[in-house]
Image (tube, rainbow, N blue to C red; front, side):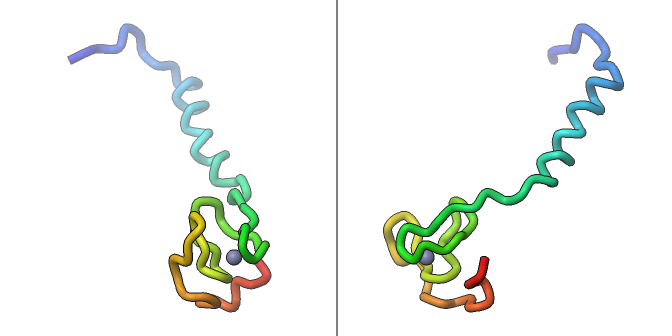
Length: 69
Ligand SMILES: [Zn+2]
């Protein structure tokens, strides 16, 4: 098994682990639906019209509360 040449300093370990926390603070990536124009999570089906990848993948208006997203 490969062994590390040197011990990783505490500061380097802590800086690396901080990134996981910083990434959680960011707002989720939103995309505009090409069919109805509402905002939805990128790489997810539109909650309003159920459109994803040029196809209808879920039923329309499945979640009417998410309309103002
Ligand atoms: Zn849509």
